[in-house]
Length: 241
Image (cartoon, rainbow, N blue to C red; front, side, top):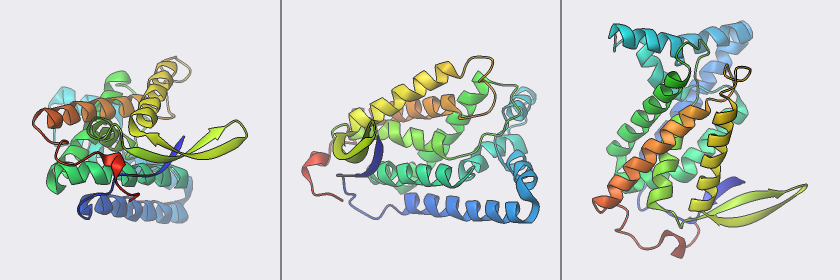
């Protein structure tokens, strides 16, 4: 299932979400220029410098060096992407789900939540593979936190999705609880499979997704407890936004 848009309009312009998307595309343009100037080897060095390298993060935490470049990499890595499909997929998810979470939380709280979600995601992957020297890049961990909050705050929101049925596909409106729940189950299955010795290195950081999503669920539940998420009417009863 590929989500395309949701039936859940926002009350105000999602400035932070738009800004994050814009920042990711600006950085991606920089990546393209690095690749054009020095090839894939230059891009790999760029990722090693600005990505989140688990082994370096582990070393910095052990030394108590919390302001090192390795720790900073957990933030800068959120704006790096490994290719067109990577960035377009992430930005699609951020736009569909992030704007409503921002609308509910408020702009500055959402920005803090997003960054903390990304850091939590990176640390989760570090715990799983603390000696890895493969840089973590991408906004998916932070976006996973937004997905976790969305599934709690808007479980019944309808998501227009492209659903593949073998060789055929169909456009269907699927409840957020179903599509995001299915996504999370896939992360759990893929993460468990990636624990094997032949697949532990490289590839997709599934546990970063899992860590970010769980943080988002916890924050979403806290918002529900204090009353956030109950102000507006049913999100699936309004026109397509």
